[in-house]
Image (cartoon, rainbow, N blue to C red; front, side, top):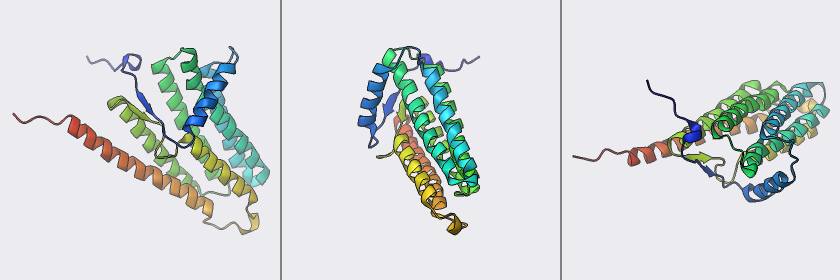
Length: 228
């Protein structure tokens, strides 16, 4: 009977991160790791990241009762960035990595976080729920590609072009501020926020298709059966 692969025993995965803020963010994370008290653990930071996404969900979902709830969504983004960006960094800084466990838990939480943030946005009066769910599907498709590429090619893409998770958070925070500044009386049935979220979902799907074709060509070339 075949045994499943052991992630902890696998070859190290090359992390590809070339987004615009990658270098200054890495310096900031390294500094934060150096001053983090001993009682702060990677698992606690992962939980903080999920808690931040819950705050963002509540902020968006409750914004129908008043735009001030959107401040809670912004605070949630900060907590989510802090926990999500620092959990793996702290584990590597302290040399306490658990490759299989960390990979599984971290990226399982990423799926929950994506659903919470975009689901909350879809429950707000600013973004249509169908477009929010389309963006969830697009993001998860791109995530599937990243996980497959890490397993098959040993490459884990954390960014595409100049954009990565941190840049995406800044975009969503800026959009949230724009929501607060919008006129509640003149909000159209199909708004600019719908265009942004729907456009993000479309971009995710296009990137998934393009990256899948590119990876498929690379694998086909690498595993081409030589002629006898």
